[in-house]
Length: 445
Picture 1 (tube, rainbow, N blue to C red):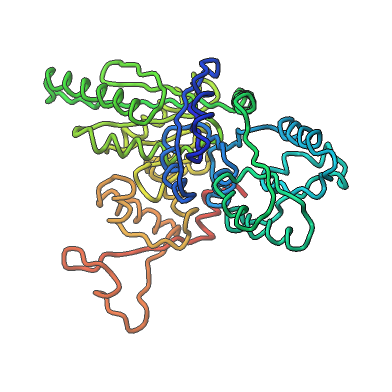
Picture 2 (spheres, one colour):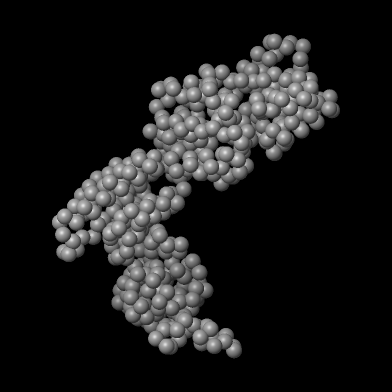
């Protein structure tokens, strides 16, 4: 079911509420009211967590979100009326005011952002009303725009949708006619927007599989195992409800799987990181997580299984993600997310020949791609790869022997204590990538 936010100014709420009671829409509505345009900031933050689309019944709100959040990934639509409704309003106006030229009427709701509701496609330019062409769309600028047109004798009256601003027009003594969309216009507009959304989502859905495993050891008694499994199930059902997500939960032996459909337009990584963070906060025992994304259920589960294997090897309460064959991203809790590309034949062969786990080599390659100038130390590599400092030292020693890295040099006049961290009373060695040799060894020419 589609989750729809309906964002309205207070005075537009009553006709909207009547329309939303129609069960034929087959979606869940979340009404929001704003008294000030800045209220939309907090509304938007709330909508990001639970809504697939945001509908605006007021022009000001619709314009505001496009200007305030130009990188917004949630589809937005204006749903008070459609082009045919505006044409109907203009036709009715001409019938009732036959002697009033339409090209001397200012329509304050036809703007560049809404493409002037396509009116120029249907009316010759000389018969079109005057449009609002200022890039700033708020009461202050609308009033100034109207005042300027009136003072220059370019208009005879205004067709206005800025209901909260009519008092200003009264003070300026500019004639106006207030435009109110009727319930049928609103209903038709919402239905059209929903149809567009559903059509667009048919071919733009991915399936997300999440495997959450509980690594039970022999020391974990049966009662404790049952407690942990019950805790995970309770957490998942509560998270599903609180986050307004719809996903299936399947329970297996010491493992849970989640499956949900997700729009290709959705910014996925923040959602996954939020879910992982909630798991780390609420599950006070070991878990491992693998996440897969694909068009098919089978492929997304296949990717999730491979990501789970990487999470098992990593050995911490964290997650890995896979959406392309052989390419694993993670751990997701870290700011620096390394991409282990198992489709790199040169790296896999190198790992076998040198006796280094292929996952560690692939992550070092990803580290190099992120920043070829990154300084390396055994402690840093150990933390990054979740291995012991001794294992990290062996890897660095092998790379140094093969001249793929070089030992760092102190700057002139700089003491060891200032330059290097101390380890057991001795300066900890640090290294840098030998860029040319590293590229030649691990990258296809």
